[in-house]
Image (cartoon, rainbow, N blue to C red; front, side):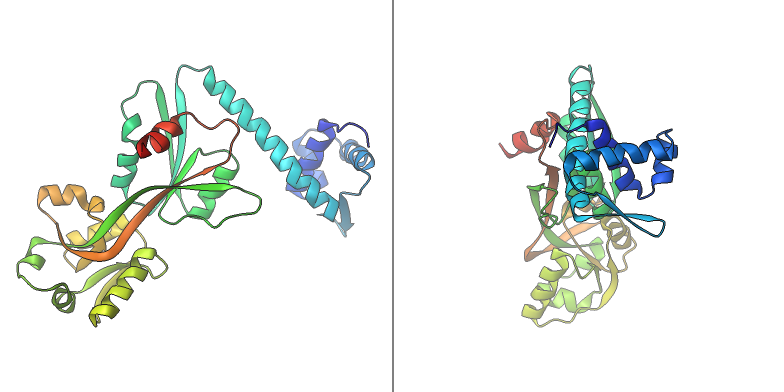
Length: 292
């Protein structure tokens, strides 16, 4: 086997991701026959066919899937190197942060506070769903993703979950809902509750707690967005099961109260990164220095 030709590999990589030789040739401003020749040369040097044709569609062979995994790693590392070295020579550093769309905005601000106001730092902030954000992280478009549940371990993409903070959860409501002194069980019997959705760790903990208390609370809303739970609590439709940090401004203004704490229930926040040869140096300020 001769030395690997990286031009041939890049052409294969482009076709493998497009899944269409004609479309890739047009995008790269090549003739279809010229692109085919490049891929055949790569196959000859590797000693294995990389594609098989089924009708008009190209499908990767087993060797093709192996080659694509390696090509992804090779070209991602190249993009990472270029991005890092460009930023190293710039006067301003950029941090690209993604956050789960339903995550507490107050926690995000608390996390970013060490960088706020720095004239040498540019923040690029994105929100979205977990799967979308993790794909961007794997593609090196983001430096860190903030979530409230760590992602599952993946054999190909090595995500690293940093436990950033744990916030106790309380019953949050208007002052009128806490005007009477009573036990936690009695308050849950008297007032409707606003809960996070069933798949969250907070909801799992709450369901276990009310089972222990032998209480069947009246659920007035199930919400997957902390900001919406905050608004519903302000509208006084019930008691929200939330970390007080989510409603910090309302508590300071006296609009809402953090009442009964819920024993054993906490919201945990994670920062997810990916193993990189050149990690963004700003992450040390946000993660490692924070822990110290």
